Length: 343
Ligand SMILES: NC(=O)C1=CN([C@@H]2O[C@H](COP(=O)(O)OP(=O)(O)OC[C@H]3O[C@@H](n4cnc5c(N)ncnc54)[C@H](OP(=O)(O)O)[C@@H]3O)[C@@H](O)[C@H]2O)C=CC1
Ligand SMILES: CC(=O)N[C@@H](CCC(=O)OP(=O)(O)O)C(=O)O
Image (cartoon, helix red, strand yellow):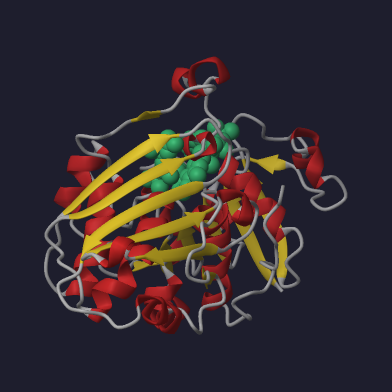
């Protein structure tokens, strides 16, 4: 058994971590923090956890968190970086669900996140936690930067084509839609039901902070910078991300379907659907699965990839548990056997 701490246990990704970890056979939930709810029983705030999680929220003190084997940060950007150096020094491994350690260049990070990085010396050591790309490095990591929700969906869709060297990489397009839980639990006018319900709009068109993260991952695979237009949208639903990705073929490919199936043949959490499929967000609701479908409309040179995930699971907490399993030598699928909620 390993001792696990969660900083930010009252947020949407924090409570999703609790839902997954409460049934994980190798995990003892040791510390769950909230500054606002310290002292309150976790199950009093989240009744779905009654009978499964019987501890109270505590303050996020380094002394308590240092007794854990691993600490998850499910906090806003810029919080983990303040506590991570001390925790690593105490021998604790860390998985950050926020963006503090995702971008390797601290100048680029400061530009998109609007603050200076407080421990840039850890950026080289941090391992980007996309298991389909970095599985071996994650196993030995002390510090894992869990990918963003949009970046997970977009990278898993484009990577087989980039790795095969068959598409132009100067003008990739990612047209992506997210449910409102992607914005977190904090009160915001834009995610009020009367603002987001019965409506649909894009945001961040001129530049969203996930753009540099996606470009960094795709450039690493390609071995050179890539051009990408990324347009996120807010859908009037709670969970789910649907990415429609466009790329231009520069080499003929006999069988795109076979290329994708081969790329993910050994991946427990990526499902390449049969040709002609239309992945639905509800098919991955609550599950740590990315479902993909690939098209070459009218036999032209444009490839269209459809990619769906649950933003809170494969896009956040589920992927974080997958990373924890790798770091501690457990079966990668442990605690993650959930089927999507249909209907
Ligand atoms: N929602 C999503 O789909 C995804 C989110 N992420 C990222 O994961 C992180 C968490 O997101 P989400 O769960 O949606 O966020 P929420 O806003 O729902 O929750 C944030 C949590 O952080 C805690 N917190 C806030 N400030 C501090 C602080 N200064 N010190 C310690 N704890 C603090 C809050 O609890 P309290 O104030 O009580 O201490 C709360 O529990 C974010 O960085 C987000 O960008 C990544 C992928 C997907
Ligand atoms: C719908 C919605 O608002 N989505 C969020 C996604 C944020 C997120 O997941 O943030 P990080 O991955 O960077 O931590 C947004 O666009 O800001």
